[in-house]
Image (cartoon, rainbow, N blue to C red; front, side, top):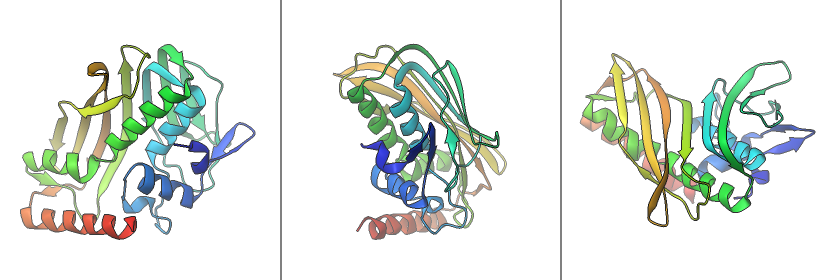
Length: 234
């Protein structure tokens, strides 16, 4: 993954075009959420692209926490701070978009960065429909296909070691909490290298506008999404 293809760097700042964000979502993250389409009215840069940029800039740490606090759109310039245990990505007006907390050993190793980035992005791209749909169905609810509201809230990774070769992310026990039309989901995972678990983490999301589960409506929504993936993947 050549992250420079998906962002623009100028004097310690980064920005993104719609084309860069959309291409990363579809080609790297297998994420076909319409909000990442080039012509989307409410377009935003994928959170996983911000994650990839941070790892490319600061390396991999044993503990990494990412807290998303704002939607990045085309043309917004984010100021890359100096390396520190707690970092905030702000625009020139002082608006915050991302908090990054790191601790433990850190390593700016290109192979390690690539391995962790690709493994996480591939896992994250399975969120809909593979991971999220059955979790919600078990709770008797579903995402409203006419107005899906799923917000990427945070992500954390804890690594036992940085001596990792070819890390793979595998699903762990996920957590779902539903309160009426709202809910939260933690997609847990562990990292495996050479057959051994070397770390663990979770991706946290907030959901709104949930509907009672309807098998037919849910199946139709999944079919439309999969057809969209086939069409846009050509």
